[in-house]
Image 1 (cartoon, rainbow, N blue to C red):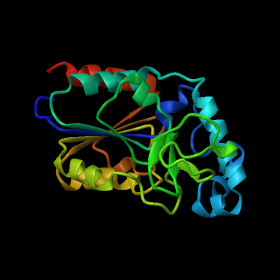
Image 2 (cartoon, rainbow, N blue to C red):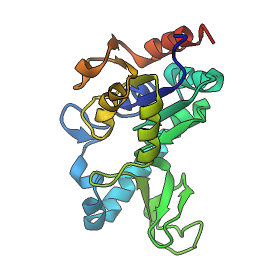
Image 3 (cartoon, rainbow, N blue to C red):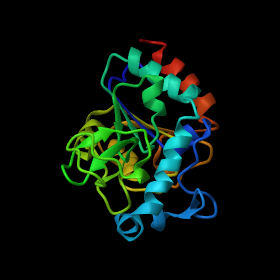
Length: 235
């Protein structure tokens, strides 16, 4: 590992599943009993804002009952001790990486504990009930907040920063992702294009598993701490 300086890590639902956070889409195609089209698109918010707000309020409340697991903690340890560049990109909207202590972190799909004001375009920390139509913490306009979540049809956050990091990294690691949702599913190909080594850690092979130089199958809570110890051995 001595030739590794810069690392990009992508995490998905499989990392938080061991903490009790529901994965994005179940085997029946539903997310917590709802069609994705009904709770995760701008059109759904226009059509039935109360349903969408209550759905994310429930996810936000559930988040308060779970804790970071061994995978989150190991990645925070790597963040603290790694002397080269490191970017942890998560597709997850929970705050478990944050609570574990990761600092070099980018939430590409937004955050449950954030509100986006459609009146003043400011994003603010938020961990209460949005369906109650509270005023914006910044401009104080009522009934103008929406979940700060990147829905289908919207542009993920931080793409320029992510693409720059992928072009500079020596190692790209994907953890707990399906490899089905773009643009994240294409990160491995971008990293390989620029010469990076690539590693996948997942319960089962992802849809893009064949793009990776190495795949390790198992639970993130077991695989990730072992890998972090391995890569920090020479630091």
